[in-house]
Length: 288
Length: 159
Ligand SMILES: Cc1cc2nc3c(=O)[nH]c(=O)nc-3n(C[C@H](O)[C@H](O)[C@H](O)COP(=O)(O)OP(=O)(O)OC[C@H]3O[C@@H](n4cnc5c(N)ncnc54)[C@H](O)[C@@H]3O)c2cc1C
Ligand code: FES
Ligand code: FES
Image 1 (cartoon, each protein chain N blue to C red):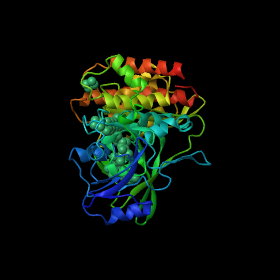
Image 2 (image 1 turned 120 degrees about the vertical axis):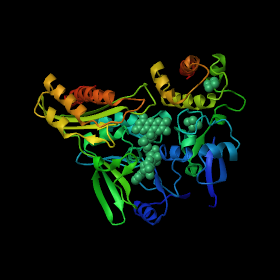
Image 3 (image 1 turned 180 degrees about the vertical axis):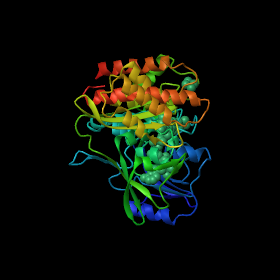
């Protein structure tokens, strides 16, 4: 295994483009090292992106949007005084990952690029409309988070492409987001179902919605039918029921010891309703 | 592949070692620096027995490569006592008999010290969540939590 710590994303991209065999980028390493230690994946080339300038920065741009460096950890997100006020759902989703120790290292980028359908931060990022900047040999492109995973452990990133920034949109007025997951324990477990919801209101009426489901299909889903179920409503019981039904209908889950198909499908509906209520309350300025 | 040279600081002392890029920080601490306090319980980030701090941040040393320690400040359980004088947390762990086999203890001490530095007055719930990544197969956790809470109270009074 060759270890590199390039000083720029262009250099990281060139190293990956010219590498043979298995290549991995090293952000927090909480997936890479586990896979290495369990002899699942031993990279031939490991490219540590943490020595690149600015990768630990959390920046609020003039238009209210946020730029996060690709090595920003969960702990740094939770400790940030303002990020969680704008995007509590994104921050709470990241904060659910692992223990205090794992939080000290794990990143949004690694969670996304590892390609797990159960990755906790991904539905929250999809709901929030987050994009990533991807640097390749031919320059950079901006890609929606929902377009990165293509299947368990697989992404749409081409050889030589590296995620170089996380872009979170401006929260704007009367908006709120939330993330909920179901796990069999209270800590340190993998989502059986995860739901991210982001809403915007005009008065009491929902005008914009994005709903994303995790762990119920080969990739995290952005479910348009869920959004349509709540847009134009005041999130009354009928709208919530329609939302729950749309979430359940979108599920195409696996059956395993941690959750049967029937269970995951039902829970997706329940959590979608609960997450929507929290997002709605937050959009109203309530502290929940 | 040739070995890589790493210069880092452990418990305040500058140290150097040569390591294979696949070796973890835990391997390097134990096998190259003879700091065997941090234990390998699982090697996959689940048990916390390998806990250390890196630039003040609590991490699992089994989930970090030895080469990543270049230029960092590492603190391990060996740095907690002041010479022969035990840290209040160490004294309380003994007083409460908060250990049996002791495998988890170094990790618990490092993690609990890190908690108290960040939050000198944690609730029991905060303490339990903070230590959720430190598994103990022997004590049932209660004595550990009580030892940490009592240390926090004592340290608040002393300061
Ligand atoms: C004990 C434990 C508990 C966990 N609990 C959870 C949990 O509850 N929920 C959850 O979702 N996950 C969990 N995880 C998994 C893991 O912590 C997360 O997926 C984490 O966010 C990964 O981030 P990282 O920075 O450590 O990624 P890394 O391990 O550094 O990288 C992961 C993948 O992303 C790729 N990558 C990294 N950076 C880039 C980049 N800039 N461009 C392109 N590709 C890149 C790497 O090549 C690799 O394939 C847990 C892990 C452990 C060890
Ligand atoms: S040995 Fe590192 S967490 Fe178990
Ligand atoms: S005392 Fe044995 S594992 Fe904790």
